[in-house]
Length: 565
Image (cartoon, rainbow, N blue to C red; front, side, top):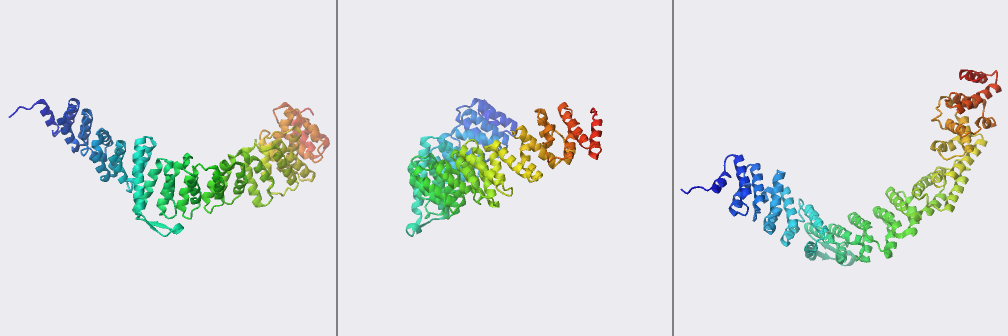
């Protein structure tokens, strides 16, 4: 009996009952067996070992020796539940080169889904004609088709001319073959093509693959498959295939874009949706802008919205009237699309301002005015001065009738278009209401200015304070000077050195109660000037009504505050 060599002993240890011994033997062979076919065969035999740890060590050793001509042995491991095993098997398969093509093609057609997807990934990396043929054969499969489609698209996006040419040639050949098999019945607009459902689905996929190459030379051929004679799934696939071509904006042909505009209002909602999605990124040539604008009156609401979104960028100033009309539509999505388009169109500033000035005063008109104001806000700095002045005069005229329901929107527009004029108009209205004895209404119209911290003159601030004092005198006793908008006006006037007490004494519509309330509040202030105002007002009340209830209350408050009586 021949004596065993050291290598024979190591090979024998691969079959030892102890897994740790088998793993150690694999490590030794991996370190010393590079280029040895016998070592490769022995390690490959252990890839079906029942212990996952041993399989992992065998894979590591096979990587170390640079094993080749493996394929069938590695394919089962692609579906392993052990991630490390799958990854090592993938790396080894990738190193096999063309030798892995056949086993990978077999793995693509059978086995667990995870393994099939891994096989598809390796086939796309091989990039050989045979690998692509295998992948194209799997395109129509429910479990694998979308994955393969994604892999093909990603590979084309890498821009390698050889791969693009191979993929496109196979897609076009398949399209031609399936197209010839479709049965054409009828003529003209009534012509229809019938084909098996599976063939129609495969044709749609092949159209998409052909479109990934973005070859303008194929635009017309792809567009032909979007005609009504083809089944819906084919038409949708053809329209999707055109997206990259028409987005490039050159070579697609005006006829193709023109056809897309027609399909966007197709009676078949799936076809219309696909056409709209393609048109969304399409370059619309100038000569077709008028045709594109017609989509604003399409039956399909999504087509209307698409036109609203892109019209300003395509048609410029001439599109603005249509977009303003859409802004007042009852369709919420169309309104939103038009608003976005108008917001990005600088030339919309003037027309929006004029439209706002022309709005009536009904409930419907009030809502329309609100939308116009929202659309106008992004253009605040661009509205022509004559248009702003027209809005100011319009607001002034309408405010003569306080019942006008369109007034709030007009006034809101003036807050960002002409804040000074906005305040002026409100004070004119407040003065009219005050002279009519409607102090509460007058203060209500000015209150937003007080609360918003608008830029006001001392005289305007004094008017707000007087109206607020007249309207809510009793409530001010429980208010804080730093929070209440009425008391804040007087505090700011005191700080500015305005003769508050002197001016208050000349207001014929103020009562002693009002002056007492203001004095009572300010005499408690920590600020010397504010406290002086409080004393002066309470002294005035005391002197005007020395024996009356209010005069006695003023005297008591002065005494408690330590004033010099």
